[in-house]
Image 1 (tube, rainbow, N blue to C red):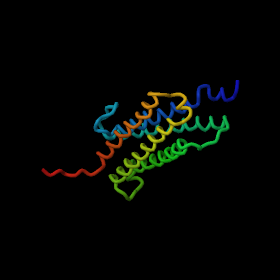
Image 2: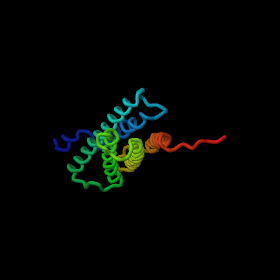
Image 3: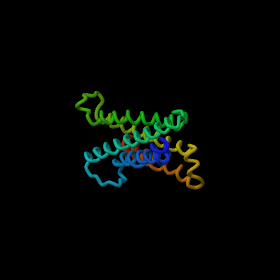
Image 4: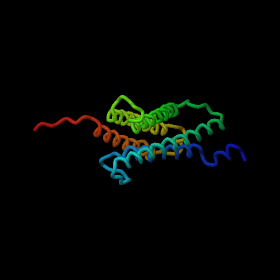
Length: 191
């Protein structure tokens, strides 16, 4: 038995895809949609519980991303392929770095008083939501770039490829709508 067969009994393309699917499509999306007026699959009423569950979802997203990244790095090392050579890998690295910075911003929002930060709590929440939207859009772009990889194009063909290409856009539009509706100033309509 080859060491690569032992370390990676299933396709590493499939393994990292599963972890990044969990990270992006489930955890990160649900963590953002918790605050949506349209609702979420979880029926949390209090804002405090929504914030705690948002924290849990985003932490799970970072853990799943780290596990997926470790599979990719291990696979590249075993197969002796170069790292960070595609647009998908470069944007994915930037997205992971931005996700970590966003998590740090979230900590600043939660512990605003204890950290004695100068911006108001409301302003920090606005910054956190805006930067979170940027991270989510970076994630969407990274997922869409993954669809141009050799592995994905060899695995998924025809109409299914187009379905996979369009599906990430819908949650991104919902998240953009949610954040802009929640944080952009509303103009009063005069009759």
